[in-house]
Every structure is written in C-alpha cells, then in structure tokens.
Image 1 (cartoon, rainbow, N blue to C red):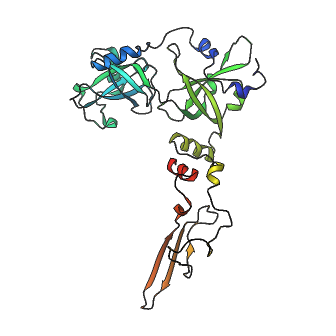
Image 2 (image 1 turned 90 degrees about the vertical axis):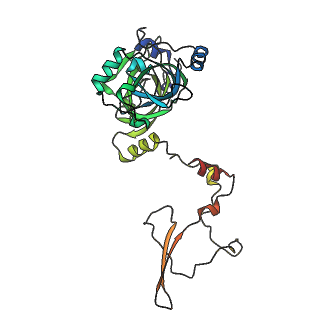
Image 3 (image 1 turned 180 degrees about the horizontal axis):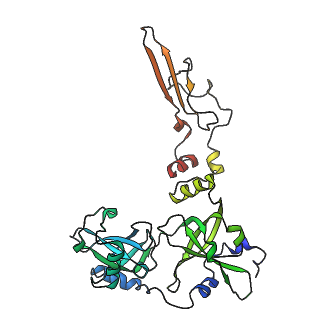
Amino acid sequence: KYLSQYPELFDLLANSPVNKNTLTNNQTIYSSYIPLADLRNNLRIKKYHKGVLRVRSDDWMECYVVIQLSDKSERISVVIYGKENTNRAVDGDTVVIEILPKVDKIIKKYNVEMGADVDNTEAGLNITDDQKLYGKVVGILNRSWKSYAGSIDKTSITNVLSNDNDDIKMILFYPKNNRIPPIYISTKQIEKLIDNRILVTIDSWPENSLYPLGHYIKILGKNGDKDVENLVLLHEYDIPSNDFSSAVLACLPSSGWSITTDRSYQSRVDLRNLPIVSIDPPGCKDIDDALHCILLDNGNYQAGVHIADVTHFVLPDTALDKEASFR
C-alpha cells in the first residue's frame, strides 16, 4: 500500500505474489523438476543427460540439446519440441533431459508439423531421420535469464485484483528475440508502457503459469524510432553502449592536451612537417585516420596512411584499460 502513489516503483518489484494468483488458477501445466540429488545420480549412470538448450528457429518451443550418450560416443542432437517437453527452459539454459520413447505422441506431432527432413545443421551435426532422438527437460542446472528488449501486447491486458484494490494490470511482454517466450508482467502504469520499447527480466516460471513471470526495468523509447531500435539491437547482441563512468573519463587527457617539449615523445618519428589531412567526416568524435601525399625528388609520389595510437593514453590496469577490455 505504501507504493500506491509510486507506480514506477511497484513495476520494479520482482515476482509479485499477485501474479501467481491471477494467471494460473492453480492448474498445473508443466512437470515438476527432478530434485538435484536425483539429477546428479541419474546423470552419473547416464539415465539423464545434460547440455545447453538452443532454439532452432524463431519458435521458443522448437529446441535441441547436444549431448553424448556415453563417454566414447559422438555428440548427437536431441530434439526438444513443444511446451511440455521444453518444460520452462529458455534458450541458453543448461538443462538435464531424458530421452523419450520413439512412440511418444509428441514425436509424431513434431514430424507432421516440422516435416521429416528437419536436420541438425544448427548444431553442426549431420544425423539421419532414423538416428533422431527426442527428449524432455527434467531439470535446470543453470539459468541464462537476463533483461530482454521488446514491447507489450495491448490486447492481453488483464485486471488484477489484489487485497489493497490497487489498479494493477497484468500484460504480456513480447521480446524482440523470438527465441524467448512471452513474459507476464504486472504494472500500475500501463499507459506509459504502451507503444514503447521496454526492458523486462524474468523472475520465475511456476509450474502453473503458461509463460514466465517477470518485471519491467525501464523504457528505451518509442516503437519504430530509429535511435530506439538501434538501442534494442545493441542490447540484444550484448554490445555495451552505456555512458562511460567518471573513473574512466578521469583517465583521459584534458581537452586542451597537445604535444609539448616537456612531454616524452622522443621515441616517435615527428611527421608534423608533412601536409597531413584527416579523412574523418565533419562532426566525427574520433579523428584518428589521416593521409598525406608528397612529391619525391625522383618524381614519384609518396602516400602515407596515419592511424592514431590511442593506446598511448591507456595505462595498464586503469579504469580505462579495464573498460576497454570489457568492451
């Protein structure tokens, strides 16, 4: 109740109990995971197998896991198909799977919907249809959850009744990356989120929830805006684009820095007598490429290509050095 006047803070809460009561109606959709001790024992005797779950295409329920059936056998790709068999695993999770009998009905459904010629090229393998194995996730060893960029589905808005009668809405968030399933989030600022690209993270995935539960992190900007869509791409491919910290900026030379006689440059060749010109466009922030061209005494031309040595300012083990290594 203390957050009723601060909806932006409510949205940042992870995995509110309201979510579970509203979405699931106490109906079990997925199988329970095998206890960790049993998983380890069955992995040891090769009853179960572990690997990283990967999504084949743009359908989060069409997956595979590459395993070894024995210590001396070659790697083989196991098809994990359908929500019951993916069993709340997400692309990149380290999972434990069991091999399903070939008569399982989900296999027949897979062959009808996907075709019998589905191969293992994404796994870097070449396996015939007769060799195909099908499996089900029975446990998770490591989650790969992170924040995801995407948009909300305006048609999925659901009112949530809470003990405090707060105006809470439940809504489906669709990640830009189709390999990730939709995510339920609860919000008290629905109008603010509509038509925007936002960041959402997964908090949990109960057995009685069709999709994982998560919460809103922040707004990136309007859908379709070029700069915003660039931010989405940078985020999805884990390319750092945040501002540099004050510690990093403190490592840079002052804006009025220039080469002077009291600065050590004796080990470098002084080329300031040459007609060197930058080839970087107007407004460029990093003027680091330049050319020169002069007529030699023998009538030939000398062309020079100059690249700035930015490492001159990057001292070992400084904040700038560490940031550069990270990026």
